Length: 407
Image 1 (cartoon, rainbow, N blue to C red):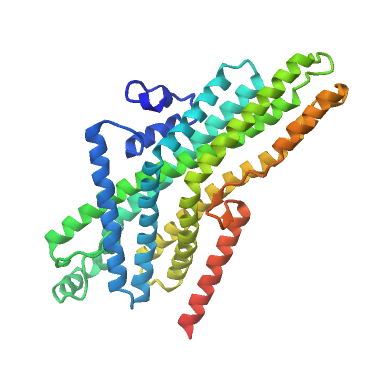
Image 2: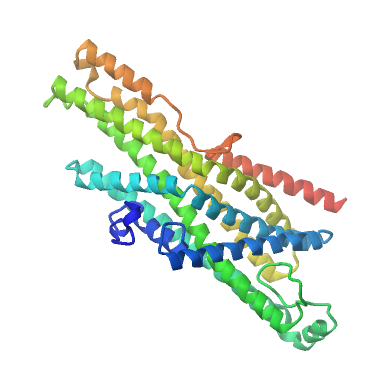
C-alpha cells in the first residue's frame, strides 16, 4: 500500500488512523520517495550526523568546565538519539511499512463494518492519534523556535544595555558569539563569517532533526494506540461470540466467530512482535539518554546563572519528560488492555453452550493469556512504573552530583 503513495494519497486521508503520520514520514524522508528528494534527505541526515560528531569533540575540549559540559551534553545526547532513530527507521524501513500498512488496512475494515460500537471506538482512536500528533508537533516547533532564537534573545537580555562591554569582550577574545548549540569547528569562531556559516548550519540541522524526532515519535505512539484499540475491540467481539439471550448464535456461526477472533489475535501478535523488535533498541538508548539528560538539565537549573539559559534548560526538561511519559503511558495502556482481553470470552453467553464449545472457549482464553508489553532492550519494559523509576534514578544522580559539587 505505501509503495503506491507517490501515485495516490489514499493513506493520507483523514479517516486513516496513521494518515497524518504517513504525511510526516514522507516530509522527513523516512518513507520511500522520488530520487531527488531521497538524495536531499540523505544529505541532510549526514549533515546532522556530522554535527553530532562536532558536538562530542566540543564536549572533549570543554570537559573541565562543568557548566559548559552540561550544556553540551544536553544538546549532543538528544541529537544522537535523533540520528539513531532516523538510521534505524531507514534500516528497518520494510518492517515499519508493513506495520503501517497493517494498521491502515485494519482501520479501513473497521469503517466498512456495520458495527456501530466498532466504528465509534475507531473514530475516537483516529481523533486521539491526530491530537497526539498535532500536539507533539506544536511542542516540537516551539522547542525548535526557542532553540534557534535563543542566541539573539540571550544577547539582548545580557548585553543590550552594555553593548560596548560585549564588543570589547569580542575583541579581547574573552567572549564568543552565541551559537544555537556548542560545537567544534576548525576555524576562528569569533570571525563573523565563520559564525554566520556555523549558525546557519546549526539552524538547518536543528529544523531537520526536529522534523525527524516529531515524525518518529508520533508514528510509534500512534501505532501503540492502534494496538490498544484493537485489543479493546477484540474483547468486545469475544463478548458477542454466542449472540444475546434474545438472539443466540448458532453453533456454526459461533465457531466461525471464534476462528476469526483467533486469527485476529495471531495477526496482532505478529505485528506486536515486529513493532517491538524495531522499537526496542531505540527505547533502550532513549531510556539511558533520558536518565542522563534529565539529571544534567535538573542540575544545570540549580547552577546556571544566565536567565535565558535557565529558561531554555527548563523547557528542555519539560520536553524530555513529556517525550518519555508519552511512550510509557501509551505502552502501559496496551499492557493493561491486553491483560483484560482474557475476560472477553467469559463475558459472553458461554454457560448456555455445549461442553465442546465451552472447551473451545477455554482454549481461546488460554491463548489470550499472554502479557503484552513493549520493551527497552532486554533490560526493562516501557511502562509508567519504568517512567517513575527513571525519574527517581535521575533525581538520585542529581543529588549525588550536587553533593559532590558542594564537597
